[in-house]
Image (cartoon, rainbow, N blue to C red; front, side, top):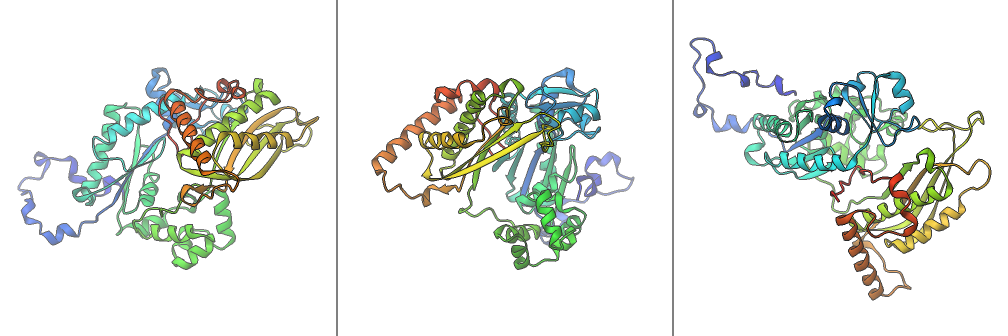
Length: 459
C-alpha cells in the first residue's frame, strides 16, 4: 500500500473542504474504531543509489548527469553503484565498465571514496534518530527502526516515514533520496522499501499483505538470488503464489534448512528476530588488482591485507575460524579459449582451503595463508594474478569454542588481550597502524572497502 493511496486528504486544510463540510472531531471516533486501525512494527530506510547519490551531493558538477562509481578506473572492473541517470541507460551495480561505456557513452566514472560514504552514513543515522531511534544498521545504506506505542498505527507510521525522508534531505542533503518501508516484520519492511524506488513510501499492513506479495516475483524477496530462484524453479516453485501456498513444514523442506521455515513465518507477517544462536558462517574479502599490481609479490601483499581485515572482523564478532580459503584468478592472453570472468578478463581460476584448529590470531592465520600461497599454480599462464580472495570459514562463536589441547589458558588469554589492543589501535588510528611489514605495499592499491554488514568507523 503506497502512502498516497491511503489518505488523500492529508495535504488539504479546512479552506480546501467543500462548503458545509463539518470536520470530524477526534472524540467522535470510538476506542474500538481506533484499535481496528492496522498497526505496524518496523520502519525500514533504504538510501537510493547511495554511493552515486553521495557523490552527486558532494560534487555539484555530477548532478543531473549519469554517474558510475567504480573501485578503480579500469575497463575490466565493474560499477559498484550507478546514479538514476545511468540506470536509465541500463547501467546497474555489477555492470562491467567497458559495457557501461557502450550503454551510456557520456557516463562519468568516479573512483569510490569509501571514507566519505561512511561519514555520510553516520550523518544519516543521526538525522533518522531525530525522528526515532535506529534499532539496527543493516548496511552502509540501510537501517531498521522498531516502532513503539503511538508510532505503530498505520497513519502515524506513514507520517513518521515522511518525516524521516524529509529530515535526511534537510540535515544531510537534498540529493540523498530514500525509500521507506513499513510492515509488521523487519523482513517485510525491507521488502516494502524495495517496492517503490526512488523516493518511495510503502506500507504492508496485514490486511493487504497477501495480495501485495502475490504481485512480486521470487527475486523481489531478500535472500532469493539467481541460484536460489533456479533451485526453487526446479522444485516447482515459479511464482509468489506457488511459494505462498506452502505450509511451514514444506517451506523448511524446500530450503533444507530453518531458513525456509523462518521465511514462511515472515511472509505471514509474524514479527520475530533471528535466534541468538545465529552467527556468521564465513567472512571473506576479495579484490580485483589494478594492472600495475598484477605480480606475485604485490598480489601476496594484497592477500595479506585481506586476511588482516577478515581477522579483525572475526574477532569483532567474537568468532573463531576452523578453516581458511584462498582464491586466485590469473589473467591469460585472449584467444586461448579461457573462460571470461564477470570482470571481462580471460582467466584461469584456482581455489584451495585447509582446515585449522579453531583460531582467531594473526600469527596462525598468516602461517596458514603462507601454506596456501605456496600451493597455488606456478609457471606459464599463472604469472599474472588479477583477482585475490581470502575467506575464513567454519566459524564458531566464543561460547562454543574449544581450547587447543596444546595451548595453555594463560597463553590464550594473553594473545586475546594483545589482539584486542592491536585491533583497538587500528580502529582508532587506521588499518595500517599495526600490521605485518609485508602488507604495507598493499594499502594504496587495495584501499579499505565497505563490507556489506560492517560499517567501519572513520579513522
